[in-house]
Image (cartoon, rainbow, N blue to C red; front, side, top):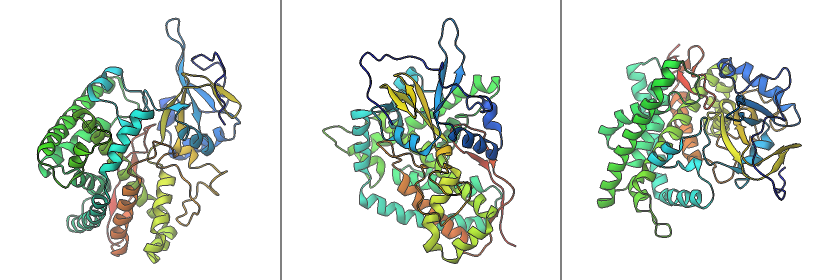
Length: 433
């Protein structure tokens, strides 16, 4: 639980208390994220057994700079607490690691995920108002059509990489169709999204560290310029698409400017496409690994589909973690946190918490209840695209599993080794006997 700030409480950099005890692996060490997923989950299980959050040092203290690090929130209850207490656990200045530099935020605008309070509420209200019932109904019809088309082409062309041929295509095409992005712009957008997000949270060699940030920012800049140009055109000639709705949505006399539109589009493409394609890829792998669950799903798809989608998201947890900054003195367990302290919300750990989920490592499409945190822990930053992602996954697996083509994963997915998202780089698959 949290407690109000005491009078005179001041910010400090933590680290003296709560340091990792002997035998606990270092979550701040990039080598930890190169371990097999089962080993990482076992480490999280050991952390959940501890009474209080543990501090991990990302940068040792020096004469000039204090230690930098974070408290790891690994229990379901603690992640929910932080998610639903935005006045105590702020998203600003950034939820990713590393946090966006000030000049990057000035140049590209603040992403909605990095905002708090009235500013976040205003942007979210503009975006929410643009998602009209008519637009969402049209999107759901489009999802069924695109999912069927993808599987038709899959059976005709027989590609081998599921991520490229299937998992990426559905969320990308749906978002581009909703936004009204012209077909001619889409190949470049795919390329820009891949460049902008490929190395988030991934340990890289020296050459990559020197080269990739500039390439990622250039990719982001080009994508935002492209969307800004579409937005300017829609202001003069609106259509029946989300960009038109966003640039004309009026909340207290305010609409989205070009930078805000570009920032939202980048968030939608990276978060919406990345997370959904990873969940889809993990889903095929899980259903191949657990044939009894696949057989149950196929036996009565409409009955079990919703449960299967929720369990795929829980088990795979596409977003591993987000960061928060403590604004007011509070306690988590018996650990006192002070203003300025960083906490990391490990959704991947919370979704395996045995106090909430019975037999948490088991993949069970009939699991009920299933209060997973795959779309966040609630509060003002709960994922806007959760409903859309669920509909996409349900439609695609209906097409993949009910046509009796025996589509299955071959081998394990190739993972990116990221501490940010559970990214699948490629997944080989086969069709037929």
